[in-house]
Length: 313
Image 1 (tube, rainbow, N blue to C red):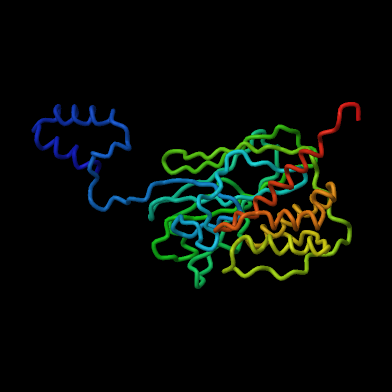
Image 2: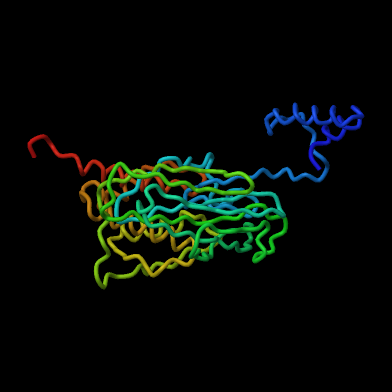
């Protein structure tokens, strides 16, 4: 029906001309103007699309899961990643219940990276709803409705996707741009500038030993899936990535294994098992699951420094 203010102006003016003039002037006022009173029943949920690190799982109401919550979460703008490796994000789409949307992912150039997209399915735990099981999307854009008819979660206003990018071994720096676009009447766009580190994560050894550590519980912090791999590396146990991931925990574990494969290929004095144990101990204790990103930051810095050679070398 539109703003109550417009209907009131129509009745007060008593003429079609005055009502049209009221509409004309109101149309020039920005949509976010707070003094335009909406009719009762209009949802207060604002459409949005947000991107979070793999360690910040999002519940069906757009909130970071308490087990993972960092204060504040790391802002994802220009992430770095080596070649022959994955980088993963949670994409949270929030819209009012009863509405639908389209979700697009657009790399530029189109062949800059491999793109896989999954719907995240929620599991009810003692700590609330936590996304875990992955359903791969085979075509994009994806059409979605709120609430998710396959989940039947009361009051749901947010659906979550797992965006999984693979950087080819021949990717060229400085990198590329990728946009996550959500369309609900208008386009809501979140761009990323992915920076490519020209160092390749080694390929898994043929017949290499698969990771034997147990998968973390769903109701554990997202960091537990990565810290288990770090402990294996520090204990001089190496692993290879498993089969195609089926859960968020699988994604986090696979990415951590790639981190440790990179560590094993760099200077052992800086990234060997003993060195990584010291790095881990040096990280300040803080709430949330994103502390592991400091391990990754350290490895990526060492990888970048490995490219520097003395003059004349």
